[in-house]
Image (cartoon, rainbow, N blue to C red; front, side, top):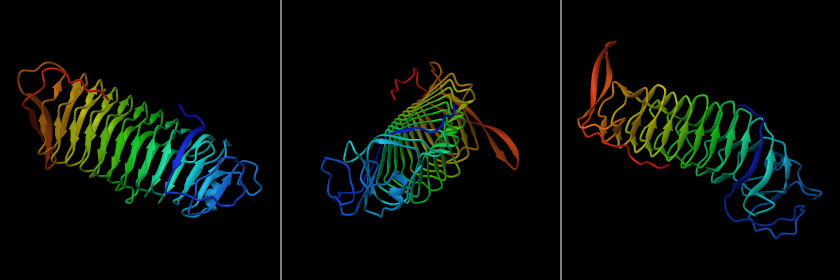
Length: 340
């Protein structure tokens, strides 16, 4: 399903404390103090801007853009550190409709809070380029051609993506090109054409308590995305549950269920720990190619087992494939109760 963009919502972009300037305004409510200038969007003031983007383009670092309630048909792009607030609350934008080709883009912009927007249609829902310490939470993103949420760039660090509903897009969430220390938690990512969560050249991601249903891949990590924790996710009815081409990854306490192809596919890499997961009714529960130093421990394998569970794989040497095995020496006798 692809629909033209609606972004109804609440965007909180905060950087510090603020001051009132004498720019034209239309409000009876007192506004907080700020170090920079104030620019106004909507309302009836003679100096007010008619679009949010015009106000942002004419602002400087440390300024505040104040948006009156209304409907704004535009694409909003933020490439500086400003405070963006709405009429009903001194810290949020609420009840704003954005009808756009893309959703919200941050470029080299830190410490932003993107909250409770509804974004549909266009090429990218929320894009974060080389920006750190941002929170993206409780947004609904649907019908996007490419990425629901796309975070990329070597300066993108310490971002949090939480409690979003991401459905019927090309991709759900992508971390690309040297993102570092990202938390992805509590999201519902459903029926996207490709990956629900995709990591490329990214490290130290925590992927926890997400529900990933009906995508091509639940979680796909490749090209040296290292030191990732995948914990307590429900990964169900995808083509591939989890596919890893990475080092030093922990896969623990997930329910990996009813996936059409592999529940878990490991492609190369070292030092992965896979423990206390539920593997239930996947076509192939788990398989590996050339995997070394992998620890399998206390996973539930679709039924009660009293003996070690063998995991089959293949090793490629000089273009010749050899059958090899890993062993879960202590498989669980019953499924774990794993709540998301």
